[in-house]
Image (cartoon, rainbow, N blue to C red):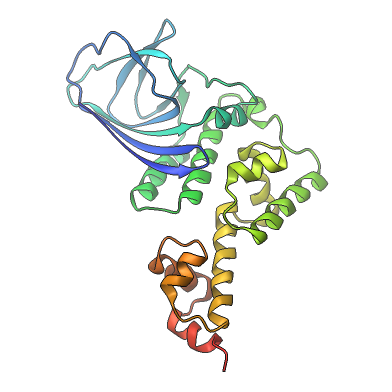
Length: 270
């Protein structure tokens, strides 16, 4: 009746496809929300009752849930519904929502560009996208949805000066240069800022996401190993943090416009 498939996105975030095939009628009298989540409706509609209020949700609206919240879902049609859910850790919620530990309970309008982005996010999860890229994209999507509701609350805590923003970007680059395994959550904790604001600041300062910068650092480490004479691409992929050899080859091809065999021959010591 309810099928949930989720993909871990790292940094306390997961993306889930939620397919409900409940028949028409009233739902269970009470069920407990499994976690903090921002939920986009892709198809169908349903009525959610929580905290004494009832709201009809359809693809024009998103809803938020909080862990342990008592709720009920009623279904006006027999065809069920399909949703995309972004589950967030309590720390992520507070970082996105100006320190407040609970997400809003009223439905949030979903403009066309955000509707497309949540569908693309789910497609990327299904294709097995890099978990850091998925997590960063999911956090940004949730933040942009919430900012449409209360922009001031989401923007609180943003670095105020150009010097602060540059220092944050440098702090990320310094840590990833030493160890590309730093996650967005750990970077944000080390630099004393929310993951959302760190992600936005880094992109504004450098023109790329933290996940993309991390991947490019890994690619250059792989090139250095090729230049040292290492010819085992599978081992290089494992040593530099790629999912597998094919992942390494795709990234190197995108970065250099050359094949791995060409790079191996051209860079190898004589």
